[in-house]
Image (tube, rainbow, N blue to C red):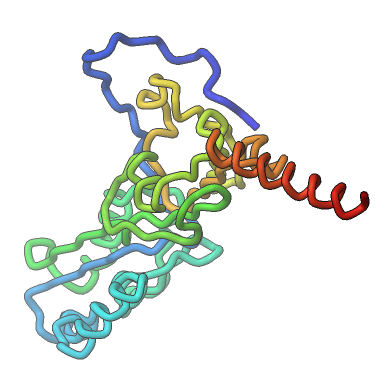
Length: 245
């Protein structure tokens, strides 16, 4: 595990802290929304422009969002294990390790074989931020937020917050990189977190909240619960002793 350590300067409350989020590079399992439009109705039909306006498809997408999914999984393109997406007419395009801007430029270049630049519009964006929460969260599982960027506190809020026994100073973040996976321990109480590379989530991040010792010992999550548990235990012991005597 790697933690934040003491590599970030301490700042005073009220001082503006600049975010230094690195530009995200596309990788395996990302879902990208690729929108290609031209002045040609024939080409637009090939790229699904007409189909995307189909009321039945729009209704299906809305139902998918309501059920906890997202529209981009239906209309977008999933990057395969080789970093490829397959586009109509163009064929396979390698988007691995590219920013969305670089992916847009690559697709534009390939489209210029079929249409003039002034008659072409291409947009590439991530199909939302997907992440997973495990452990001491009130709502565990896979989550999708249809935004380009979210911070770690927004992600925790989306998961219903952490339980009272969660270790907020040692949350585990598992992050996927093109070359593999790395895990880090994050201290949510450290104000220097906002300056780190972990403040903003990346697609496919996994958050694991470990329990405090009280969970492992089976005691209550606060003084009242612990006191009630102790009284109940003592009462049970006294009843057993009385029965024996």
